[in-house]
Length: 636
Picture 1: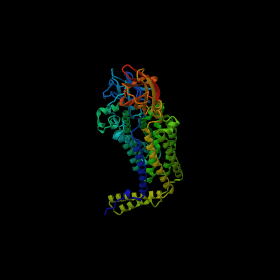
Picture 2 (picture 1 turned 30 degrees about the vertical axis):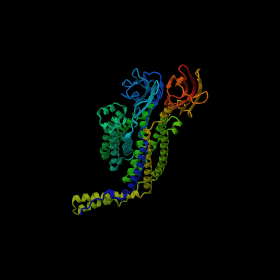
Picture 3 (picture 1 turned 90 degrees about the vertical axis):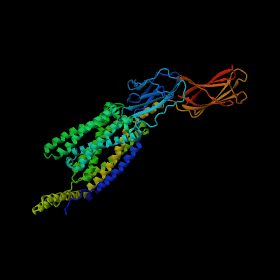
Picture 4 (picture 1 turned 180 degrees about the vertical axis):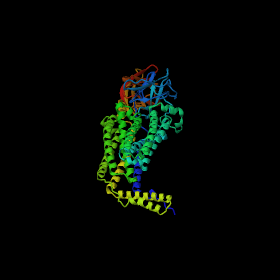
């Protein structure tokens, strides 16, 4: 019977890695839960104003509609559409005009001449400067509000199944970048012998494959993600060409080209570099790979910096290189941590010096993360209220707390590292690998059988070596603490990725400030009582008006007319008008319907803006006797 070498998977020394894999799986579940709760990307450029304003009623048709945003956006044909009450286009249909002035971002579309009275809907959709799609809609009225048949999509742009898959691809891309850059840096800077170790090779290659696949998915889905939301449009060549002309599309293509250079780097690292024996030549090659790999890694990191948060807002010229440093430090720390975890569990040869080198690399990465993170936090948050009162700020607090926990666990790992020693392999272990095959050959055993026995003995020798190393309590403690670090790091990476798809606190606060400039709604319904006298027979009485809920938007109006005797009084004609003199809005006519003797009602009365409104009531008691009375009241 032919003897075969024992399968590595059957060795008891790999059982600890099973526990590690389980822990990583559990943390991955947390990662998935965070992703599930992230939802579609929030609007990072916010609509801060418009002319006409949302809900406004203007006396005459404006020549154009303008929209003001909190940051730069990319627009195209149909980005701003104005629809009349019958859902027909009321704008000229040309590409919006850029009316920006200095730091004010404003776009406008011209309206068709001679627009009739009624309620018009403005629907807009654009790409924020940080690559996320944004959309919205509002209404204004010419003359007086009216019914409208405009039906807007209920699904937010960037949402739906396409948005979910695109979001997953973004998370996976960050994870792939961390493994690729962190794994390669760990091999070059901490453990050069790891270049010839199969588990380390697989880790880095899988990082490259993951990042490449995620980037391709994002490039194909970019058109439906920012447009139709249909998977079928992923292979629309015209849509793909349009994507390539945008900043996010160019960034994704640049990342793919840089990944081609990264593939060459990996081939040299695990090929020529791993086989190089001469110390001087290997040192020169290490320097070359470090420089070349650093340039490629920085270039890949720049594809995020040039197309997301760092590329817009204040101090973009400083923020982009800072963001590149931040991403590289994250990859060196977290990716190196995963590499160390794999080395401790899957390879018997990593020594204490490699662990100590990584400890120094991790410490330097933390310093860079602290400096760049403080700057980024100030730039994206800007105030204490934004830190505690926005989702971005709350996620940032969670990230800082996770970093603090991670540093605490890393402190324990550093203590284990300080006590770590390279356990010597007993002399009795090594001769077995050499003596037994030679004896077999001397006894006339076939060369094939001798080679098989040599492989078998090599596996047994490696198993004994690892068992001896695993018996070191310091090494065992280090493995557990590094496993805990890696688990926290995965959650930290998930939270960091959620931050990149969340509206920055500074922008959210600015948008809220713009929307809150209007007066606050009134506490309740408005009640008016106005006496009148038309001068004719039975021309005296009182008009009572209720406006409910008495705030901006749609209201219900009830009007009662009582005679001088206090009983309900029918009149031939009753008209109501509303005027906001401070904003030159109105008069907005209201024609109530008669419900019963002395009782009229009107539904859907639109109050476009809050303020001090003048309510005019015209009462006609005969063919020639009528009077108009008015009263000011604060509404909305």
